[in-house]
Amino acid sequence: MTGSNLRRRSAPRLAGSAPVYLARNALRVAVSDLESLGRLVDTSLVAGATEIANITFASSQAVPARQRAIGLAVRAARTDAEAAATASGGALGDLIELSLVPAYGPMTFDAAVGVDYGGQYSPLMPRDVTVQVQARLRYAFVARP
Image 1 (cartoon, rainbow, N blue to C red):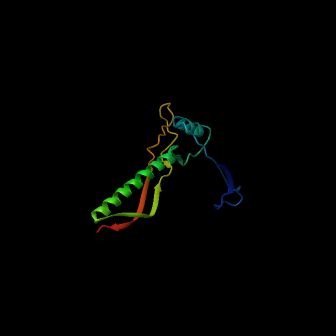
Image 2: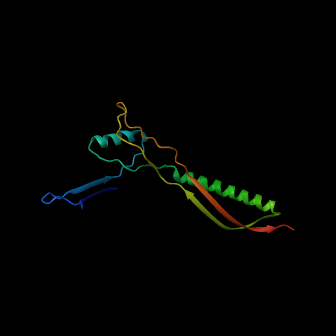
Image 3: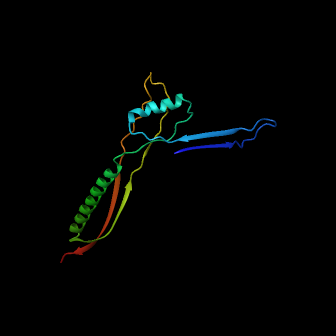
């Protein structure tokens, strides 16, 4: 995504002074080589960028990780439901409802950039990206005689 806008600043100004304009440019860059990220940020700042904002990390393995998490969550929920049904003197009947609440999103990096690290590029390393899924299953209860 790239974008630019130019707008006249609406703050009051002195009589006879020139209008003030605010220009803003935005550029979205995606990199897969995390080791080059610090160099990219530093190079942008040296080239005149005045702000680096919303550095976001996302996993290229999010979909398979989410699918594994769904399988684990559904199996765990069924095992718990079976234990509850058995403890209540019955068994599970047909599955009535299944709903998933996935929790995954990119992680935003909040740190100062453009700091002098003794000739090294700014260290920008993400933390672990966590994928969580909550499974809610509802079964019919079959009472045992």
